[in-house]
Length: 246
Image (cartoon, rainbow, N blue to C red; front, top):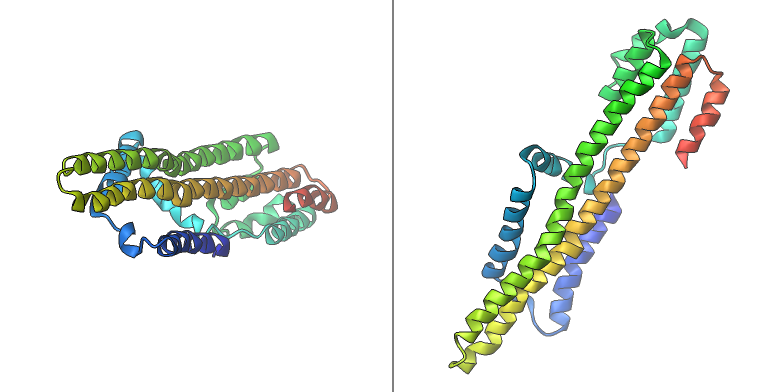
């Protein structure tokens, strides 16, 4: 679990709630069904028009990575690659065949299988890099869904505020409704700006960070498998891959 992201979400809520209370507006000032419909539903509507269905589905599949990113242990991965390197050096590449089925990661299993099958190193690199590039492209497109929501939400907040002020203008003859109406109008602006800057844009950036980290781990796997395929000395492989640990 990513404790920093969880802390950030809790602090975002606390900043809005605490700020509203400390400013004397109270919690009721933060709740407006009309503002919610205009800003949140409107933002979702805009992003649905903006995004292909497959990308939208992928976006909400990877949203959990903000709190619970994919497991990653590069030290353990390095140790695993070194074990394979030593086996290949002693028993040849076919000695790794028994390790293929035990790999839960499809990418790692595919690379190890190609290694066992005696595929040329450059062909291994080419095929695995296509997989990495394709997956990274798809995941970054999904992350940009939240970035798009962060762009649309403030504009929807302005639309909500304008609609609220229009309603206020229609009630100028009744001064008792003016204060409440103006406050309600600006609630939409809060929804738009706060959701964009405290939720959607940070989510997009966090997902991009996780995606780049995963791609870096995949690059480490590729370099390790290629080095084994080329018969490099295990100590040299360890030195080469150590750079990925930083």
